[in-house]
Image (cartoon, rainbow, N blue to C red):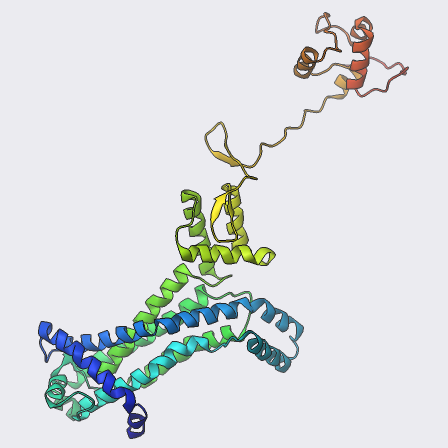
Length: 425
């Protein structure tokens, strides 16, 4: 412990100072010696640290997106060297180096929190052993030792004996029950965060080392928290449980608003975006414009969900632009059918009904078509014969122009024709 304290002594004093400042504020509300004052001070420390790490988290997201853009290349390497795992790994590392990406970028927030974690652990261990550290003096040390969180002292551990727990003014049962519940919640929140990432926000069409790493972390981290948690003071458990809950909420926000391409989360996001755009006819958020811009830039490399999104906009008479905006499409016109439902695209061309064999042989034209053609064409003469006249008689009585027209409509050749027997009706 002395080695760890010497390594993180440069940050122990700032961490203890931040805790004391928050304790001053909460102590005026809940009382200086209460567990609420010291517990909320630790929670506030976590929130402050995570806010400071937001730029690092954004960098992590960008690095993760860069990894996702490389997935088609990774898939080609896997198919090319599927029988040579060593060569496959070498080509993967070469691709990472050329693109400037790092598959371990997802661990950056955890690595950045490590100094604060060990500094807080050292501060709380000093409170448990009765030693002043940083800006925590004797009065503050005595106040912290009196603080209990749901019956468990701030500096108590699951592995502490009955005598040590009694010296802190608590019972061994209360300490172990509280610490066990906090360890379970801490491990469960960590597992849910990783599982949410693997099941919703990962492109499962490509098997990459990044996915294998995330799958391994999904099981390794909860086990690590459960094993090492029994040696953590209650204050450290509060710290780590708070940071896990923050990470879980932050991950849910990212999955909901900026999902991984090809993942289930992207399918749900694009479905919501399609409904929003077709209802309002425009894009409002900058994040939505950025996503649409990236989809348009992909062209033929779009995945199934992105193609479905573009087709949905097209059916609604809209078109995604290269700058991420959405405009009305001139190629697709939205019409309304007789029942009031919208129909997209130009009206379908209706094919004329095919005549029967008897109609073609008799030369009898369609009544509706002939009435329109005879009215509009000056070269045709209207026949005065009754409609039920026989085909042969009607052909004899018609003028030469109309006879030619009848033969052309019936599909017969011009000139002398071989006599045919009258059709049977």
